[in-house]
Length: 113
Length: 114
Image (cartoon, rainbow over all chains, first blue to last red; front, side, top):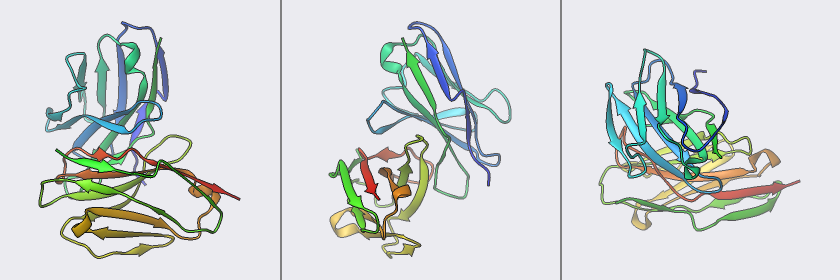
């Protein structure tokens, strides 16, 4: 069964460093999303992406964040200058044109020191 | 604005007991979608069920069943004859329309003891 994949599974970085989180959505899906979950808290929406542009973004998704679909398969989230409070699990999700359900990847656990 | 409330933070049961998870939502949209996701200890988010606002039929799928009541804005989820593998955090989520962002509840941790 097709699934969303994410790399790396874990990333440790120093405050102020740039990180890029990578996602490979399900192959025939055209809608992509990033969510984050701070440890022990609820899952929060960051951004949605369709047709090579951002459809919607949350207040969390400030100028330090950017998304890109650099090729036909990858979908990336970049945090330009990480802060301690960016430590969280980051989930990528994708959805097909014909179905409302978003399918999530296994997540990348980011720890900012 | 949308809101999803899961009042139960943690539920502990003994194996084979039934578990019902409550979910109450708020939305001004007339069309919306409701979901339940499971997050096992390994951390991933696993889709369980989806309901459209215009379909209040309640269903059973294996050991899972759900009760969608528009009149009370509730979308409750029941696990029948719970098993240890059901131990996880369960999230209720709401989307205002196809393709739109999911708003999650705070989650309910279910612990099934042998």
